[in-house]
Amino acid sequence: DTNTGADFTIMEEATEFISRFSKGENLPMMTSCCPAWVRFVEKNFPEQTKHLSSCKSPHEMFGAILKPFGGNFKKLISGGAPLRPELAEFFESIGFTVVNGYGISECSPLISITREGFEDCSTAGVPIPNTEAKILNPDENGIGEICVKGPHVMLGYYKNEKETNRVIVDGWFNTEDLGYIDEQGRILVTGRA
Image 1 (cartoon, rainbow, N blue to C red):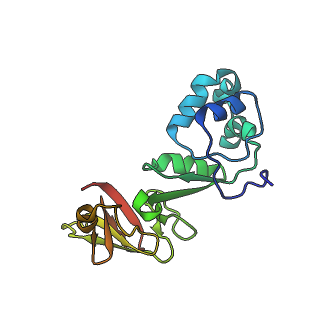
Image 2: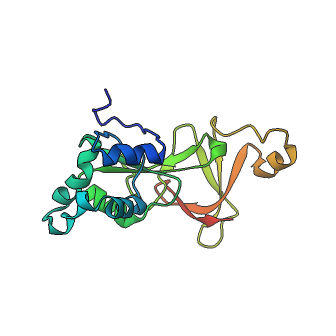
Image 3: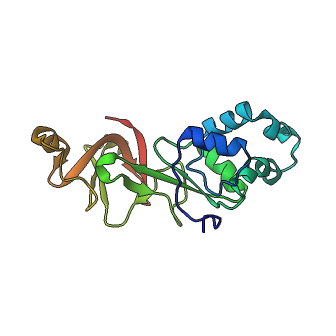
């Protein structure tokens, strides 16, 4: 039943999504939420969003945008780029759970995710089960290269032993992202190495 607001993602071509949205079809789930979507909806669907400035509450305001999605989804999942904390705060203030993930293709692709007890979307959350994370060569602020180990990490690059040996040392995959791990075990990504 696709109208339950289940915690999974539907991936669609953007043109198909836009077509279904503009026809007012019931879209029970959304792939992700980002500022670009808000700007896109306001720019391309002015008739559906023109009353937003007169809304009295976030629920009332977001209801106009939420209605074409069926009104059934409960979680917004962000990944692929850092989520601005003020966006997470807004969606949480109107009753949604915001989940922020961090990953890389070589890790199939998830490394960590925010979840109950670790909801702070200014972080990339805690490592997923059976995953270890460490910081290689941390500086005086604890920032260094994020390395991970787990059964989901690739065995190596196809027919490229030199590159494999460069990024996997003693079973640890170097993501080549910079960051640190806070006292609660959450990963904070600060840049690229």
